[in-house]
Image 1 (cartoon, rainbow, N blue to C red):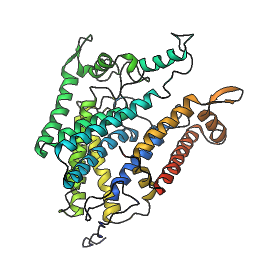
Image 2 (image 1 turned 135 degrees about the vertical axis):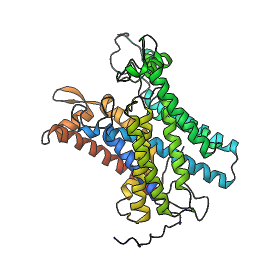
Image 3 (image 1 turned 120 degrees about the vertical axis):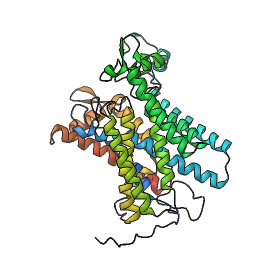
Length: 420
């Protein structure tokens, strides 16, 4: 390949097929790669969240048991990183339009609160406790509603996104780049020191020797103290992977994305220079994360500081690669399905979550003479008879992804985009 090859020109024309907002300036640069990157993240989320059976999953499609990482552990931090990028681009566009700081603060608070409430509503759904309640064998309809409220998960994926969006948005709104770097360093180093040096109440040991445990570390202790066991993740009860203390370093993930957005938006620099800088910074961050892993292990549930650096670096490298392929080399023939996922992330997340709750736990049919969740009945009837169990489970997940691609494609063609 010739080193003298010149980059293909980047179109600055507004493209209604990939844009989710009306452009502020006629010459606004549109990088399709951002929608593609977000689309890959959303499609990946659907794939790993909806297998045919949780007992038969290929290892890359599962979260790491505790320390370490798999491709699945990249999805959530990638999404927070994208939130940081789009926050910078959105706020910059609003400033260019003439919005003052007070207006921007109101916008950040409004969007963050709506995102949190959407997540809380998903946790409450169907707003009524189905099935047998051991402590209330003769529960009335009112009892079931109250029980649901008393045991709802307060935090979770969307609530964390909402909280992190507000915190990162407000912090970066009025701070300089140097101040933001200092704040990120303070968040990550402070979390590291707290998790390793502070004695955990009731354990007679500092946090460093308890990091390998799921329910005895400082974050788990604070989860129970702040949320109570009735409001933590039902999969663990004793800790919450999106708990309040581990949300602090997650703010750093979004702020790193904001810095990446600042770099990407420097249109006075050639696109290839921006891509190269993003790739270099990402590679360095990955190395820092891997080295930090020796003393503070990469861990998604604890959202450790090493995890923040490693996944932010991976996000930079992934995005730079996509930008080079799509926006620099202009190879776009493969991007439309991912753009379809990427332009409507809230619909994909909330809609697929509600659908999953319905088909996995609430909607039952008679199969082989016994009540069976419709998802399980479909999986057993369609895929399991002719495929190995893991392949059948993956085939169901791919079918779920394709179903949602069809739904989002209809919305895309009708130009229906849900924005908050």
